[in-house]
Length: 361
Image (cartoon, rainbow, N blue to C red; front, top):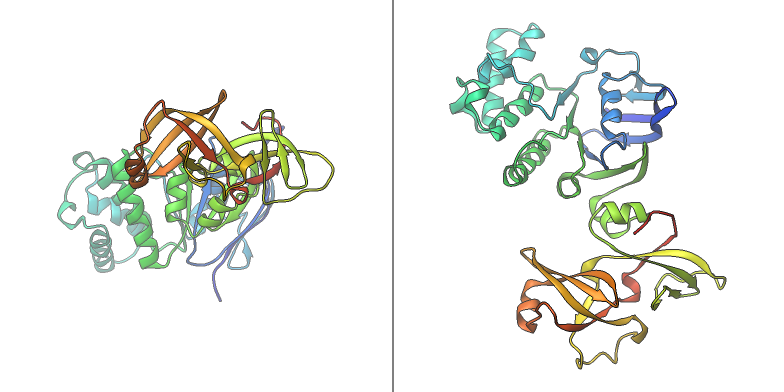
């Protein structure tokens, strides 16, 4: 029987403040889940309720079919890695890794073998006799990771474990975390506010806002099919327009766009979202007869930003800023530059349509 972890109507209140509001989720054994959301959305509170460091106000945490709300953290068979590495400064690398095993009264021979396994797993065998202060930040985080893995926990929970590291090391270490997870087939729950991190390592992403799960799904589905304007805005980059939809037409203050998602014949307020890579760029005079002409809008390139594989254009469309991403090769071939007059094409199928809410850009 697989050892699934379940959250049922999980709620946490602090007086009149509801930090987590009746969330539900089933995490399968061996799955890599990322909780993603802005600061203060409740993601760390969910993690702390799973580990037992935070009491549950309402609802249940179930593991292997049993309610574990009442169990203290030490009895939950879960490992946890914090943002601050929390290594013992007066212990060597190998002593830090062995600490949890010694607390469990495991014999010395087994501890020595397990410490060697963990050091090999993250390539730190030559650093075993060093103190944490003699290691780089990335090495310290590797030690914290295998120290949590050494007792072979059923579930490993990671609370923004890489956020204190610089960008390059973070990218390398998140690949290592994913490799370890796949190699060990370990259930991992990872909290982050970094969307790129979540999308690159998770099997499923849980997008949180104001204590609620707004969308749960595979990274590609979260990015391609965000189910709300909040998710479209928070995960990746989107351009937004507000307007009135009638059938397959949306009238904004300045333009009328054709959209693939047809609505009712009665006018309804909607927010349109479109990803920068969906917007096509043309020079005036290039053939555009095959396009929906109402979706072809003149503009001027105000800013050109190099992103590596893509070039980001900030385009002024009669006072409204729109972001379009062009593949670097196409950008070079067509010789776009700051100040150029261009035409932006918004394909009808590129638009996502949502009921309009206050506060959306």
